[in-house]
Every structure is written in C-alpha cells, then in structure tokens.
Image (cartoon, rainbow, N blue to C red; front, top):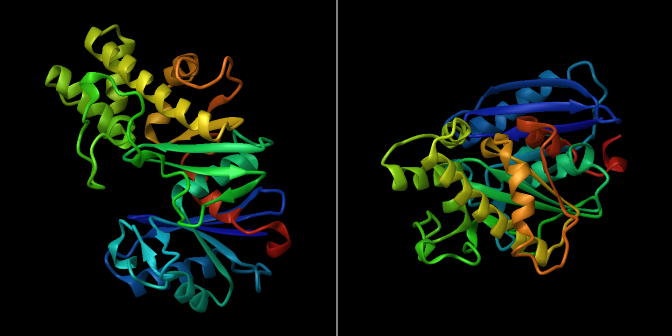
Length: 303
C-alpha cells in the first residue's frame, strides 16, 4: 500500500494506492490558511480518515508541497504557502503521523507519477513539465527522481528563454527578480500577456487557443509565437538531458495543437540531426501530484 498527500494552497488531498497502483481511497479537505500547526493537524486527521480500517502501521507517506527543503538548514524554503517557510515540516509532520515522511515539490511529484504509471511509463529518462500559472519541471532517471544537491533540478522556468529574437529581449520581468525567464513566456499568464500586448485584449490562455481555432489571425499569430518559444525551450532541455519522453501537465497542456506543432519545431534548435524524444500529454492530469507523492517511497518501504 502507498500513501500520498498533496498539500495545496486551497486544499489538502490524501490518496491510498494498492500495491499495483490502483486507487483504494481518496479524500480532500480545505487547507487551513496561514496556520502552520493547523496544516499539520489537518493532514493527520485526513490520513486517519482515509486509513481507517486498513493495516497501515509504519507505512511511510509521501507529501507534495508548494516549496522545498533547504539543504543548508533542513527547513522549508520557496513555499507560496508562506506559513511553511522556515519550519521543519517533515519532522513535525512525521511526529504527528508517527510514521516516516518524505517531501517533494509538485513538479517532481508530477514527473514521478507520470513516469511510474502514467504517460511516460517504461521510459528510462523523463522530463515532466507543468505549464500553468507557473512553469516548472521534474526529472526522472532510471525510474528515480533526480533532485540535485541544491534541490533545484528541473527549475526550467527560471532560466532565460534560449535563442531569443530581438523583440523577446530583455523579456518580461519575473517574480524571481530576473527578466526573460522561460516562465514569463510559457506560463498561462505569459501566453495571455503576449496576446494582450499584440491586441490590447485580455484573454486566458485556453481562450486564445480557442480563438485561434476559429481562424482569428491575431490569436493564431500568438499561438505560433508560443509554439516556437516552447520548441526553443524544450530543445535546450533535449540538448542537455536528452530524455526519452517529455510529458506535459498543467492548464496549458490541454491545448492539443501543441503536441502536433511543437515536436517538428524542436528539430531546428536541438543539437542533433534527428529527434526521437516524444512529447506527450499527462495521463493522470490533476491527480498526478498526489499520485507522485504516493510513489516517493520505494516498494520495499511501503508494503
């Protein structure tokens, strides 16, 4: 049995999987806002509910969080749920649950989920991309999550857009303090911003794609720019990591034309005479975060 928890800004979701990855139980509750101890207790109580009647003593739990553990301090950093920052969340949660806890950020859990039993199952190397409100990624090598010594492996959204055209320099300002980050171009808000700059109209990313489908010239031009920027950004990843599969999740991943148009464009920028890397849509969608959390522990630890 595997146990996963997805700690989000508005909800906490718990999931119990069988040994074969089949879903046994799932439940969610609201996230206590700005209340660190309340979050710990909410997770404790939620797990008590989903594990009621199950033999689960000693089975560890994986938790996806909106941040990461600092290797320097052992405390939470980079969390948009700011009450977690500076806290020993894994230790406090382990004590409350009386079981081992392993934490990872949402993009890492997404990649692990899709590599374990999702759209990238069976691939030896996977780059799992979340493109939504932000832009991030996780890396799976040989079935294992690669986080790096600084726990920033896959922070693809906060490097500069590669091979920028003149009108893409220096690029929009990013909340990280830099300009021209990939996230400012490829996130949903980035796509919306580009359309507004060109037309003065405010539309969400999926609305721009829908308008392009109707034949609107401005929306189509915006989508063409977006696809070229995504192709540049993924080609850079291919030249460094050379993954077998790139799997996409997040709201922007639901724009189906990306899977038809982007792979052919990547060839222009990747340092290879041919590309066999597949670009695929996530199988588990919004469930990938909590499923990936459940996959954080190796099988010999969970059953």
